[in-house]
Image 1 (cartoon, rainbow, N blue to C red):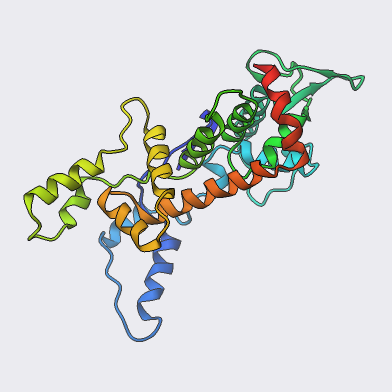
Image 2 (cartoon, rainbow, N blue to C red):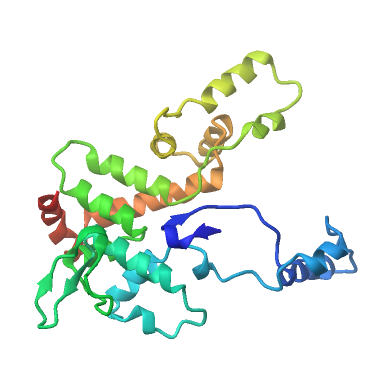
Length: 279
């Protein structure tokens, strides 16, 4: 789920739709006779479940979608024939976010550019704005606009290690938290010694940063990438209570971003120094 109008994404637990429940039930008899047991009453199924799940575009921030469409030359995103059009407020929020990040700028009636006003307002609701060079560079990075803007700023920084830290943070922020809860400790063998339990409990908090969950995940990611052997990587995740698949996806994204920034497209390369001048 999400809060598209607020520009936030969040994962919430909710009931499946009727369509999803029926689709799952079909798997019970795929290879042979079977039964499907639902952990809720038939009355709840009939009265409370929605017929279909809402489209993803209706519940998440769409600034990334808008940025990619603008980079493809689609200026009037509000007129695009979506199968399920996003909410008007979500579109306005996306445009305002991109303007604040410097990816869009207003275009006056005579074609000359004007910078956006406070809060990303163009001063003319009919003006879709135009994509800036910063916006083109942001669209070349396979992460959200906020994170790509952070990387462009880090690339222009003269501080040692700034870009590497920003890449790790961007990769960590782009996926769910890899840290498993306390219930993972209960999956340990019953005959494990107390000393071993204490050692694993200490390892589970090794990467904790008291000021930031994102920095905690970034620290875990950097340590994970130092483990070269696949089997040792799985053991690393088990000992530190990390979700192995999430860590692999974070690691893949981090390496992808490092490859792009090592041999950047022209749009990203030209912005690496330009962005710094706007701070």
